[in-house]
Length: 280
Image 1: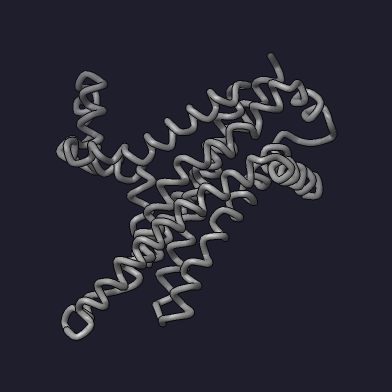
Image 2: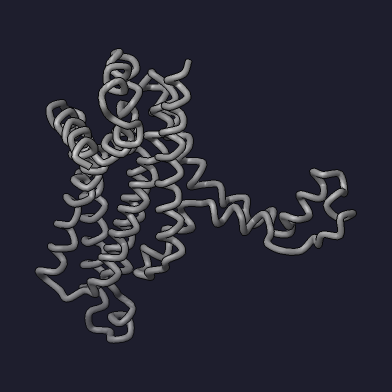
């Protein structure tokens, strides 16, 4: 564990001794702050306009109208910011020639990968942690429900870590940082929009699809054609589908397991990619 933390600390120092960390955090906080400010101003105007009407006042909820849009916006910005963070994690080591030196040290590949991931995760925590001042502003003036806010932050953190894991995997596949950034962005975008076609293929069952691919052998083997549909599968893969409940303040262990599975599989595949490169 000491070796892993040493690698992580090396990564943190690399980020914060260059303009990258400050630019990424600054842009993320600036845009998130603007969205928060715009939502808060709109909410305040509605409260002033309908303050004398008890019916409309009951419909105005600061969590639904200010906090939830903030989380949705942060999720989209992570799609843009994480590639800038993850692109250099392993691609820069290969391009600069320090990868051979790093992996010939008395370190395991798993320690290097986990250390790199934890170092980048620290920068992600700094990005997200800076936005916690926004709910604190509301808390100083009102009494919102804190549970949806905390659950929403947990969802944003897990989504960011899942994106980061995928970004580290793609960074391990190339020595070009631009290629790593574009590849990570494309992968993130696919994970976010893959459920768009779910409704169109909701009538196609997975067993029916396997039957067609096997030229009818599935059905001839006496296996049923029912079960979950292809649309259900796309919804389960989509990151946005798993984030919606977090934004609503609903804590579901299925979504937590999904994000942790994406992180674990990404880091495991990263280790396998690096191990395969050692033998080339």
